[in-house]
Image: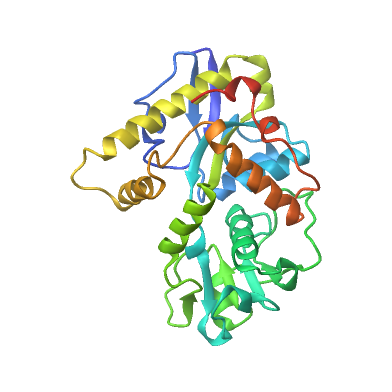
Length: 311
C-alpha cells in the first residue's frame, strides 16, 4: 500500500471511473474515495470545511475561494467543460424573445458565483449587448464561499426551487436548471448548438466548468504529488476518450462526449494549462466585470508552477 492516503471527492464520470473503481492506481499514493451527491456539495464542503485532500471544484468557486485565501490549489485537470447558450430558459408568458429583452427582468440562478452563471452572463453581455446591471439576479441558494458579498442588483428568494420560481412567474428567466417539463418554459435561443458552435469559432474558447483541487498541505509535504496526480488523471481520461471511438453502442454521456469532440475538433476534455490560458484569462476578466473578485489575477497563479508545462 502506498504510504500516502488521500481522501478524495470527485464526480462519477466516464473519465473518472477507472480511478474510482481502482483499475488505475498510482504507486505513490492511494485515493480513498468519498461519495458526495450532488457534486456541488463537494465544493461547499471543501471550501467551508476543507474536508478532503483532493476534490472536484467549479472554476468560479475555486477562483473566488483563492481570493479569500482558502488553502488549496488547482491542478490543470479540467474535469468538465460545457457550452452555455442552451442553459437559459424563459417563462413563455414573460414576452422575452431575445437577449435584450432580459433588461429590467428578474433572472434566477442558484448562486451568483455559479460557474454557468458567470459564463452565461458574459455571453449575454459580450455577444448580445445586455447590460448586466439592468437585470435583477435572483438567487435560490447561498454562496459556497461564505465571505463573498454579491453586488446590489443580486437578491435572494425564500424559494430554493428555480423551476417553481420560473413557472410561478417569480422570475422571468432562469440559468442552469436544465430542461423544464412545461409548455410555459421555453429556451431563449432556438438553436443553442449552432450558437455554441459560432461562439467557439469566434473565440476559440472551450469553457471550463470544473477542475481538481488539492490541499496545500499535501502539496507542500509531497513536492512530487502535483505532477503524479496530473499524470494519473490524464491517463484515465485519455484511455476513456480513446476507447469511445471504438464502441458501437454508447451511453448518453459518452455520445455527448463524442459530439463535443466533433464540435471542438479534438480532445473533448483537454488537460493542460497552456491550451486553457486564453479561456482562463477571459473567465477571470468576466469575474472582475461581474464583481466576483476585485481585480485581475494571472492564471499562472492558480496552479503549481511545476504543472504549467504538463500536457
